[in-house]
Image (cartoon, rainbow, N blue to C red; front, side, top):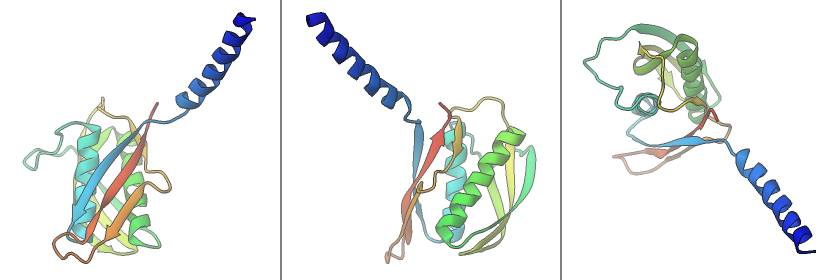
Amino acid sequence: METQILNKQHRHLNRNMDRIAKVKPQVTIQIEANGLHELFKKSLKSLANKLKYKIYNPTRHTDCTMKIEVDATNSTNLLKKFLNQVLELTHTHHTIFCTMYIEELNEKRLIAQLFGNWFDKFDNKIKYVPENGILISSETDSSNPFTGSIIFKCEE
């Protein structure tokens, strides 16, 4: 009889382990910015440093330049779509984009030039920003009106 009880407990443990195994790893970055320009630039720089530790170096030569155009309904969705497009370009071209030149930016539109470096191996295999992965609050504090966090889902 005791063997049967242990088997039931073992089955229960296996079901719980299956649930745990299905949780995808994630990486989170904290952001503080004075405006939209700084919010987008800091988000890109932080993403780059999560993909490859200490990749950002303002004096480093860039290997790749890409133009990106993003439209969305608000600034939070714009940031999410921007970061997801950057990640798509990163994996397509094996390039970590560290800096950008913003040609146009408002609450609903971004046009920018991305500058990056080629890499084969990443420290974190970041794939995308999930649906509710951006938590940004607009504060009345004039020193940092944008504060929040960005969650990235990683490859298992």
